[in-house]
Image (cartoon, one colour):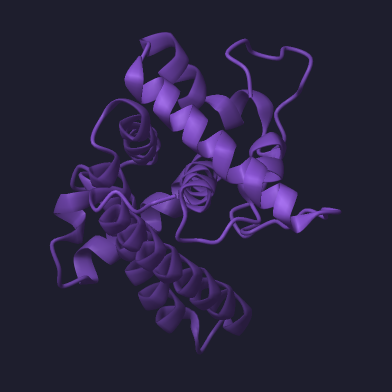
Length: 212
């Protein structure tokens, strides 16, 4: 990953359902070493000198370059590691950017149903428009590089829990009339819930200086 945009590389769009893409590798140990070293170098460098221009380019990286470069670096890392956390944050951002209308629908339903402070922690307006959710997820990712890293992870986890709640309740609504849609929403809710747990654990590990 470089600081200069690669104008020749067209963005590669991915649907919200395409989570956890796997890439082949000849040497898993080398893949792991590169994943951890690049994640640590990137975060340390930017947080030590959070140039607004560099931060904004990192926040908008998938819009300009697609997800492939990031996936090649971090997609195979364990969930509760620094590269694993960064990969999930970029996937969440891409999911919202790709289908902000659905994200807003899930978020609003989840906000109405969930019995926790997660909507407050996530920080979205009430109600949140698609554009406001795009701005929210970008702000959360920005916080990784120029704010409190653990807070950014906690906000992302809370966001996932609200979305998962919305997906679960919508799945219940569709169960009798559109079983395929209900199944897809249930799968999405499970994945979001898993991400929420992973990101919350990463936040705790970061606070204890154990996230590697």
